[in-house]
Length: 437
Image 1 (cartoon, rainbow, N blue to C red):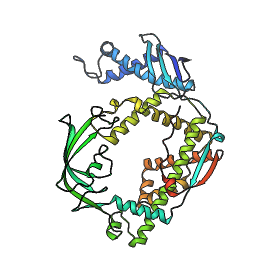
Image 2 (spheres, rainbow, N blue to C red):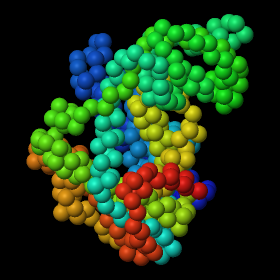
Image 3 (cartoon, rainbow, N blue to C red):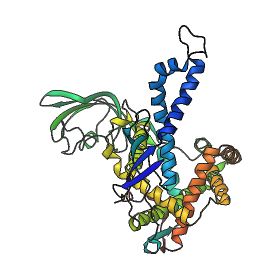
């Protein structure tokens, strides 16, 4: 087999492969012999059809089948021989496939970039530290109470944070417009659900009252047909309900599946959850800084095939997350290209760090992480056992741990500054990471 390779770009390869005619004919004859054993031809018993008849009827199909198999096999042999690492399936251009002649074709494909990860010393990381104070715990209990707010009908004028049941009709230039009317809508004043001025215009209203609100849609309103237009809303208030925070009692505690009784037991469990969230938030922020640093220090070209695969994966995830009657391929690729490029580049860099440093998942850390995740459940022992019975889930945890070990490897050489902050600052989401250039 003859192979020649041309570098058409940094990552693209154009490989010409010639498969000897003898090998081609051997593969064709093998298929014809298999066909002869099962072919049903009028006038002949099965298995007794003359090869000349078999060849006349089936040779073209056998040759096409042999072509596909030979291309697949010879391409694999050629990339192994040439020590190439394809990043995706090749585009095949047949050049010659005539009976009695060599099979010759061109395979065009991309290879994975070859690089060495460096620049650990140039990475600066700010590592936060914080504790859950009693005040933080008290604030969290109030958040939990507000999340479980009930509303009770009140015989008074509406205030901010009250829930109103309303009917409304919106008109522009005296004509009702699509999406501008509703009946029996529940609206919490101050929630910011409606356009500016709508909720404010209902403060002080009572059940049974009708108000006319003259408003203007924002210039940047999502519906461009309405953006910047003046509208008149006739609103009827059906009821006014005031918020009632639940008491911190056994009934409230039971909603969170907490076995411990009493306020002290509940506070203990909530603190544990907050501390777990705090540890994860700090770890995530450190990881993001490390990954940003690796990206900045190691610019690499991305194989188009890997980028396209990642874009398609993100499309599918978006459809699954947001639903709707839309096919993934209908979503514009450019919506996902930045995120896809970052993920592909980081995947290549992380894999190279693992390779260069001969890292393997630390099984003790794997178990520790599983136990940490399981502690959020009522029966943690069962959760741990479940992970160790499911190879796919266990391997996902191993991948997480291996990534943590990559972060640790970088931190050994990076410039790390420790900073004490409040709980709120520590758990506050970081800004979205920069896209890879």
